[in-house]
Amino acid sequence: MVVPQAMWDAAHALLTISPLTRANRTRCQTPSLPRWLIFGSDRRAMSPTYARGRRGQQYRYYVSQ
Image: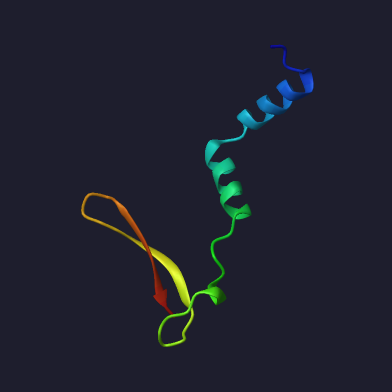
């Protein structure tokens, strides 16, 4: 398969950017669930947070604000 020169150049341009920079850009473009959408039993907005367990595993959950 022959790849067009424009596609080849675009792919190499992406590879020159740091993987961390690309990941942060992607994360910013895909927002989390809106805070005003999730409410607790006390009708207060909940926001996402996380904690780390003993072996480094990450637990994600929502807390009331």
